Image (cartoon, rainbow, N blue to C red; front, side):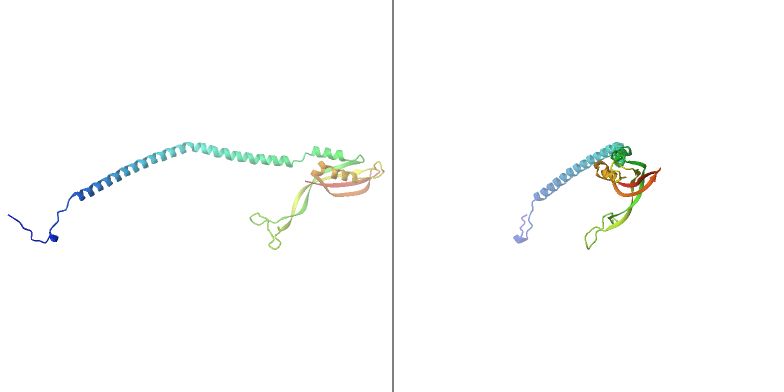
Length: 218
C-alpha cells in the first residue's frame, strides 16, 4: 500500500538522532565518576589527617610530664633569681662596721677620745613626687611639673660622742675631726655630718670640750 503524507513540510514530524542524548549521558557519567574519585580522595585525606591528629595528641600526652617538669624548673629558677637578687641587695647595703670604725679612728686627731659610738634611727621629712592610683607621678596641669608631697622616712644615724683635750696649739679643737671626716673621700662617701653639739665641761677634774656628732648614713 502506498502512503502519501499530505501534511505541509513544516508540520511533518522530524526524526531526531539519539546521539546527543547518548553524549549527554556519557558526560554525566564521567562527571559523576570524577566526583566519586575526588570524594574518595578527600575521605582518604581526612582519614590520614585524623591519624596524624591522633598521633600528635598521643605525642603531646607523652610530653606532658616533660612540660610540667620544665615549667617547674622555670619557676624554681625565677625563685632562685629572686633570692639571689635579695642577697645581693643585702650585701650591697650591708655596712662593714669594723672597716668604717677603723677609718674613723684613723681620721681622729690625737687630742680626741670617744666615750660612745652608737647607731640610731631618726625620722626625716623629705619631698617626693606624689603618685596617682596607677603609681605614676602626678603632674600639675598648670605648671606641668610633678606634684610634690612631704613624707616621713626613717634613716640610720651614726652618733659619735667624745671629748677633746688641748692640742699642740693649746686649744680644745674638735673642728679638725669634723673637717677630716668631711674631706676624706672614703668616709664622706658613706657618712655625712649634719648635726653637731659642743660644750665645755669638766671630766675628772680636767677641762675638756664635749662633742656629739651625728652622721647621716647614705
